[in-house]
Length: 195
Image 1 (tube, rainbow, N blue to C red):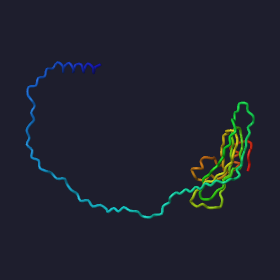
Image 2: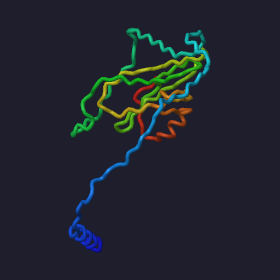
Image 3: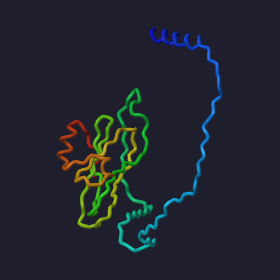
Image 4: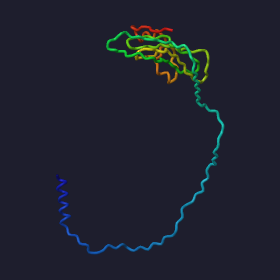
């Protein structure tokens, strides 16, 4: 409120003034003599630079994957769920259950050993074992698979063995022994496949 009154008072004073110009403005006359200037110059010496190539040994990652098609015997599991009036499990569908691990240092074998069922869950249990064949500083992937003809069930993979130190191997849970896995899962499962 005080501000509004202050602005009104200032506005009234400005409007009530009468200003008349009596003389024109005039700038002073200046006489300046300007001579041409000069910027400084510098002589800078720096290293000679030669650009070229040289040969050095460096580590370059190379991945070679060779896929060949072969006809082999693959375990086939056909699952018929108990009759259910509300068709809780749905229609059967054929699919491949594959387990993979990425290893380095030594060659490994991986094999699906058992499949357990509990409710609408399937537990695929594989075993990963190192062989005595060295692969030096290379890495390789090992896998095993089974064909399953069943309704859409939840599939969980568990691997018995030492988890290899590769980021790829975080997709499955690893257990040191079958006893550790049985302790973690508890009872109430049925073995539907055993190698």
